[in-house]
Image 1 (cartoon, rainbow, N blue to C red):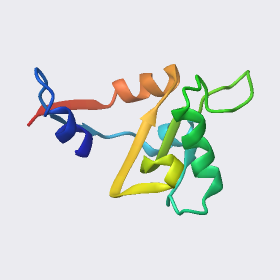
Image 2 (image 1 turned 120 degrees about the vertical axis):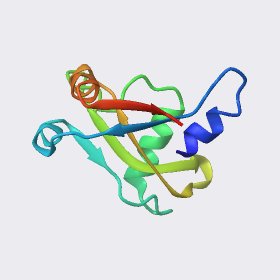
Image 3 (image 1 turned 90 degrees about the vertical axis):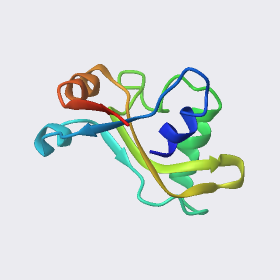
Image 4 (image 1 turned 30 degrees about the vertical axis):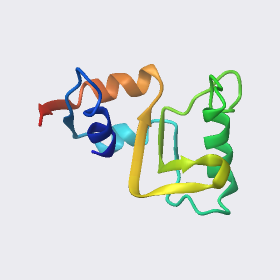
Length: 111
């Protein structure tokens, strides 16, 4: 919702709420990394944030599988200060496998 509210302030845009219902077993079959907290000392979380925000075109994984299908994490405000946005989480889908599952599950409602 936060990103929709921010995006809605840009000229020519309108926010949307996206409702997703995904079968748990299908979601569990994807390569996933999840971070529950963005604590200051969560080096693995901040390492991935730094890697991605410096413009990397992968998630720092092996060449045969450079991306996680899905990443769940708190929203980082400033990676260099290790600050997160309170009460804001994100989920991102990165591969064709995840895209197919997501597209089969999405219903869009304009708010």
